[in-house]
Length: 127
Image (cartoon, rainbow, N blue to C red; front, top):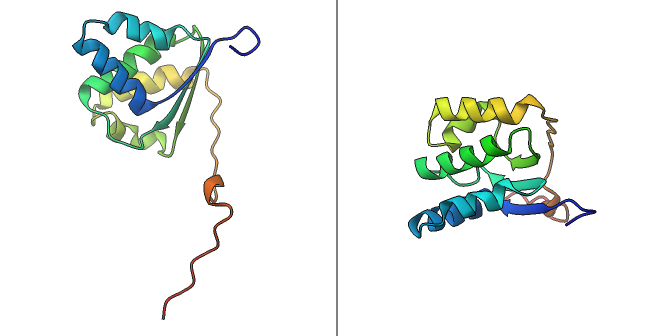
């Protein structure tokens, strides 16, 4: 908790894997509630790995249930126009998800070198 606010940080893949495992063991409702309940949910690395239909459906359910009931922060290295590729090429689901995500959104675009690579020098040209 951060000053009375519950905050949960997870990668998109971790969320999908935990929801899929819960589904296989009959605990889907409880696992979905784990991601819907926090005041702030931070989803990292969205789009880093492809998401299958079941994973796309799970993320949609979480974001849809959180819509207007908490803050959701998403980090992605993909432009919105490419999000259908992330969500199993399901343009209908992607459109509905983006509609909810962008309704009250503040979008921050960060360009330039990665923070993790800040101390790396450019490679020497090979001859």
